[in-house]
Image 1 (cartoon, rainbow, N blue to C red):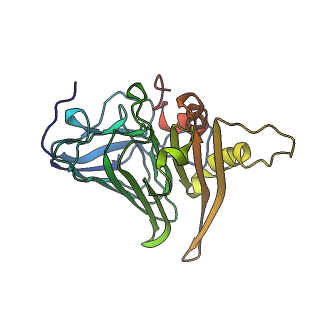
Image 2 (cartoon, rainbow, N blue to C red; image 1 turned 135 degrees about the vertical axis):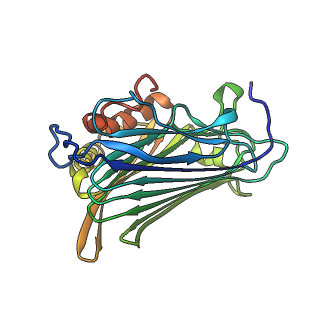
Amino acid sequence: MFRERNPTTGEGYIEVQAVQGGDEAEGKNRELTFNKANVVSRRHTYPFHFHVPEYANSGHCKWIYSMSYGGGLVGGDTISATVKVGPGCAALVSTQESTKVYHCNYSGETTQTTSYDIGDGSLLCVLPDATVCYKDANFNQTQVVQMRPSSNLVLLDWMLSGRLALDEFWAFKRYKNSIEVYVSDELIIKDCTDLADTPQLTVSQGMRHFHVYGTLFVLGPGLHFLAEHLLGIYARKKNYNDAHDQDLIVSISPTQYTVNGDLISGCYLRFLASDMKNAAKVIQEITSPLIEILGGDPFERKL
């Protein structure tokens, strides 16, 4: 059982660099090749922690798990973390379980700010488990990404409606998630999700029977294969008489940005699912083309 604790301020920093003189990873996908990556700097303060398992995967990609000790985040916690990926390497940032955001007697807003810096020709995949905001939780998350024109990014952010066993259905006070993506210091994406009850409409009313909500950004010259894979599945126009799935809604758009003459393309995907079984269909379509590059499936035995 979770023991309530005082709100705290936690910080973390981790830096991944390519091994000098290392061989490049080879695979079927020739758009992305990387040197073996090693962690060159890591520090953190309670309750936040960066865990880097030695044998989490096969291949050159470095797997990093962000964790919060004490069972989750409580009202008033402030977390600040930075992930830096050097040139020519790949990293995965994931979690070992869902990020739980609790309400406690100290109340207050729980904030988490994560900054990502992706070097030239590198790949960063942010593929965490879903966030779960408990009843009366107040969560404000900010994610800021700094990229180069040759950098590659896969960023998934998704959440569950609450603790179904306790009949919690979008019962938090507020969930706010801001995502900013910069290329060569130029802002190209600013996305914000802000969910809270209003006098006219509650979140649970607006979400109807859906229990899972998620967004995905795919960007970079080496990720055309992933963007095309997802667009091929979810951008297909349906005929008028086609049956519509009442338990899974997916919208997707191709994206293109020009920064100092460089074209940065990819896709933006959003989904609503009635349960984890339907959400898993989307997650697996996102991760399956990446398994060879990542050296494993971060959602194996989870979905």
